[in-house]
Image (cartoon, rainbow, N blue to C red):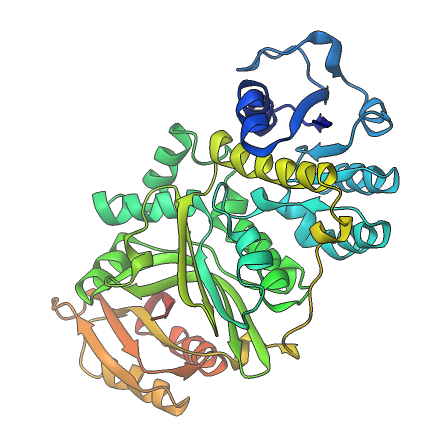
Length: 430
């Protein structure tokens, strides 16, 4: 039985979880896979903080080169996070003939072309199952399980922090700020939660899914992205009354020869499977022309689920090495499957819009007139009664309309004196 040595760079929460899994389950993995995987080196700039796993101090180091250039190490696991120095670590590991496993969605969404291109050129593997969906095996499914399919649609809830916040707002009537504070107190949100609540984290992950599903290389900044900070309890309540739930969705949708890529709060029918995905859980919906509809569900973050995904990549590469398989079997190869990325202004969808307006005759007619000017057809109107002169919410649901038309209409409507707050717009899917 061949022994495979692993070097881990980054010994934080995820790194500790990976080391714990590899150490505690070494015999289990050996019996189950026929591969003996050993943690040979662990690198971190902080070696004083106590970790939830005991390791031999002899394998600890603050020196990245001691791990990268150790000739006994076969696989480098990068768990530093961010783009620099993670990119330098990954590229140098490949140049030195090491296979790589990473959970770094920011790095792959930014520099995936360069990393995968170098790996393919050198005949090396890059495992990245943990970069999207935590322990959900969506990467392997797209690379292998659906290899015969033409993917039509990928969309899902891929940020647990935002989903927890929206779930608490829906279930307990909390404000956005109170739900965020609760998420932070439970460790589900960072001290600086911007990347999660702005939709940025989801756009990083959608970039990776688009590469695998549709063969396109798109950086996150090119993906239309909205966060959840403007969602109010009133929006959730109006949506619920209309039979919808509000979720932050990442959407990759084939539109003839073009591809829609967008991240934003979305109304989905309460009957849809994604509507019942609550808390920190993730779920990803995939439609292929042969396989049809598939839903992947599970914990999208945390040390244990993410460690499970990292270890699965380590085992897959180790088995490849031990079984003398061609290295190319584990490379990332993608074929461009769409001609272009659709401009967000050309996207057609249904809309939920909440206006905050003075309660007086003619207001609804004025709003309707502006919408009609931009060829936006109304399907439903909800207006709570109030006293004349007071400010009241007016909620309008539309039929499918052009994104550019809705943007122009809202700009004009929000400039009217009768409108007292910027209007809230949420797209509808399903």
